[in-house]
Image (cartoon, rainbow, N blue to C red; front, side, top):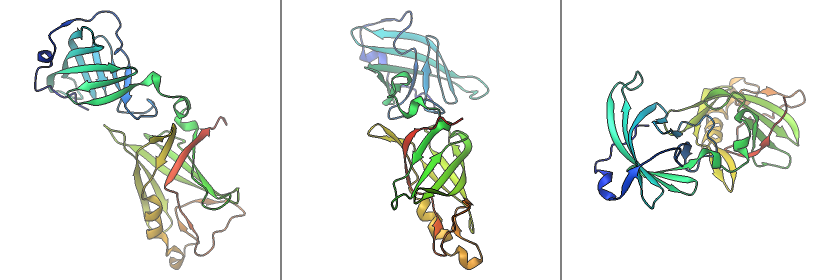
Length: 266
């Protein structure tokens, strides 16, 4: 994420400015508004008195000016000039505080202070969080866990039928640079890999993982697996000893998983 050069001098908008000193309100780590955690999140921006750092972005603060009567500061930045970004650019940013949030101009991006994120999922390490689907029938649901983290690790999906373990499946997880968009990829019985992108979201204070097309895509590619000699269709899974899918039953991921708690099992 490149800090955007201001086309119009921000200093023209404000007549009364003064130099900053000591630790200021913006000397902290911030994440894009709506984020549920600062863990493994590449939308974070961290500011100190001398530096502004983000994902693949490093800038020196060459000048900083407070605006009298407003919780805002103008930063003159010199970015790049290193192995990651050999080109050196200059820009000017206006940081405006609203309680525990911050808006950066001219981009208009809104950030939340990492330390102010509401308790819940963010207090639990990603490897410990459990996400549960709604019940498709009484006692039939799925539990999703990111055993290896979300950036490049294994996810474990467990299916239950009549409240009894039915199967477990593994998926490969990876996340992009820049705005955090992630993918889960499952191996299927007959059609190779099927994957779907997801964006962690928060609804009414709870974190959700939404895979909008995974169930439908696996169904479309796997519904005739038994006709090709497979014992069942759907994602590759380890079946529980007492569970055997019927001929027309597919092992399918659900589309929506809601944060269900923190698994403290060692």
